[in-house]
Image (tube, rainbow, N blue to C red):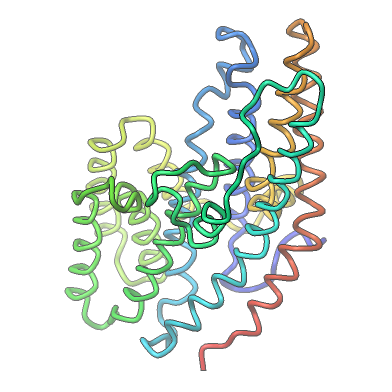
Length: 331
């Protein structure tokens, strides 16, 4: 595996942040309700859910950064959506199958105390269309709720990029303000609205990196939107999303740490399958009477198995999907 992609739009810091965010989310799920509340490892990762918001900032940056200044127009919109779906859908759908298989196997093990593995065709179709929450149902994998938000972001950002005229900054800024105003709409209907302010931190960073807004403008917008994030999501989310945007904007993109680059490359796969792999290992171990040291060993096993499975997932499912998506050209 290459240490990093040579594509000019591929920034090492992005992959590094993805790797860190994925590990943080994994460790949050592995340690929560498993270690003692005051355990140092539990304390270290008790806010690991923040990795999700880090992913949202990154997504807000990556797509505008790759398309701003190109010949992307409205006529390319459906190819854009096709390209995104080819990249994310195969890994997602196969992870759904994995969740079903693991859940079925777990239900047959001695001492199983979970819910019956009853999955309707309707629920599966809702997963395919990212409509589970519209029907007030429960995701088969708790992390899938974020994919619904990402999917809604793709729908909107493709239209906005086609609309943006970099020669008319007022039009561009007005559309971003309009996007920001969505965060004040009914978030029970479309959950994405709740997170538009976080995605905008990434979008603004893309404008700055593309030299469409100056440093002073960028900093003003960055602090302003971060304040809105503070009001709607709390200080922890505001601080970490601000740091994420600032690192993308100002950190060096030349050096790389191979371990983090590797984790960044497999981060989507790791995010998808750490629950059916790692969390299942944690849950199985709860049937045993373990001391804290033994629990550390279980967490290490859960993380190792999750990373190995994610690597296989990336190599044989996700990476081929990326190659397939590259064949879709905006012509």
